[in-house]
Length: 501
Image (cartoon, rainbow, N blue to C red; front, side):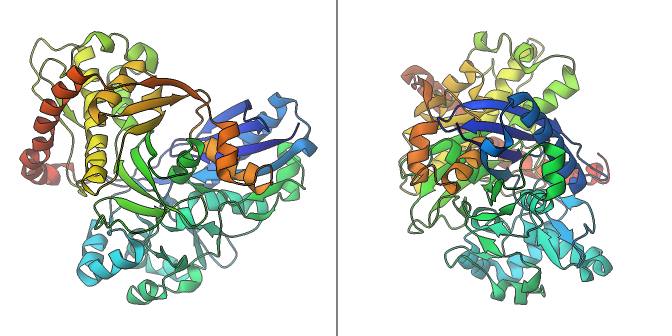
């Protein structure tokens, strides 16, 4: 039996899985690493933490699997998008990585939009938002000019880890699409954008396809992990592209709901015929010559994590959510908006913050948790509404991540989305997509679709209940009003948040 390894470099931890030719996950490991938040709105990590924890996770994976290194054909990667890693000419890291959820770049985004807004949208299919990579580059250029002058190349998080494991520098189209530097349809770095913003195109890494082999393991990495130097390494993809691959979102009509730290509604696109005018993201897929549209809720699973850390730090998520199923729709008049770190879709707003509306003395902890789950799902539903308004059919949603671990939440998604929701039997999220890219790259299959048929299996289906659908439609209309009613209040409160964590 042959095997592949999928590595998913997330925001809080790296996950590795070993998958055999039948699509069975034979072993998995994970290692966490810290966020560095020196000021309000700042979110950074030490790239060395990613490397060391990935090596440690792989070492354990090989050890517990009892699989011979020679039987592992390939490794591929998924990674958190948009993060900025700067290297000097000696390929040394110049500063901590600035992450996707860092919001310090609002001034840069405003200038970019004023100077180059519609043209930027035409080239990249996306508007300038704080999460993207280019605003971070411009922030470093403005605030750390001496350091910026030393920059020889920038990399995205997973690409840096892969570089440290292979010695080769590349990125691929699905991750490059999230930089605001890629011409999405031409699949090349945009000289026009680089010139407009005074950035040398030489700092952009070479581009490859997600399933391309980009090298093999360095001797020291092979020795430390117990893997073979002959193990082929494949480029991989952005976490959302890999999540889509791992859930079988490889043809038109399929939609993904992924709830991790952030939440994503993602739908497959063959071409660029639909114009969303920047209301949702439009990126290159990990499948060659295809695309996906995506709406993002910045604080999806993070909202529950925040509640757990703040009010129930010693409980598991299973204990935390106990009793939620008995709380009626609407949580007895309590509504939550998940804007803890600002919002992305449909409100590109770094200043907005979350709300709990309708609290009274009769509410218990379960009501707050039900309201948080409903608020996260309402926010995701706003992306589905945008898709439907643009003419897309959303009748089947594959749900992965934290939102697929709780049956009450899965039924809630079916009712709010008014769509059939599928739970997968062997859901491993982006790590599975990375493993599938390694399997396809290793020529186990003729296509990613053939790989998906072998690797992906459905476990359960949740259908919308008409009575619940109608109740949620009424509640959703109220939910949508909260943003406009709290926007000015949050702007007024912003000065009190300054420089406070």
